[in-house]
Length: 187
Image (cartoon, rainbow, N blue to C red):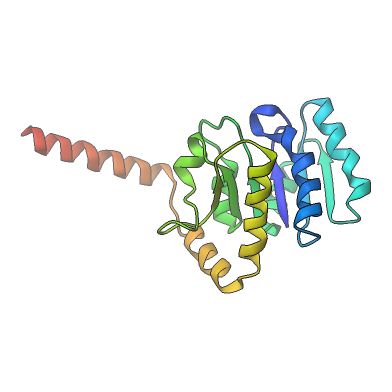
């Protein structure tokens, strides 16, 4: 299960979703399910709703905002897709990490800062570089490939759920940096 939870706007890459989902079904096959939750631009909403008939039960969308449903989706999904063009911080990937849902993110902003590709040392997510249908579809293909390796997926989930992005952790790191700089300066 691959989910998208968020605003259906270009900044979040939602305009690429309909084609990426259709291309994934065509090129990768019916090896995954998609679930989309969000609201935004009417054109994007219409395109996402329009592909339901083609999906044969492998895809669904809920147009609107529903906090409780979003948390059920985080908990029940295997992967969360975040193809953002711009993402100063991002909370969805942090929620997903706590639930053990692998983030599949565009390598930008806060997504770059918080998600390390599982192909890199100590990695736990999937990153792609360009906000294009092709790059997103490749990220989806990597998700399907990872899902077919249950032991590796289990290990990544264990690593993800131990990560600490809390304010306490950030404050500790800042204070350690500050103290180190003071000592270095002889203050």
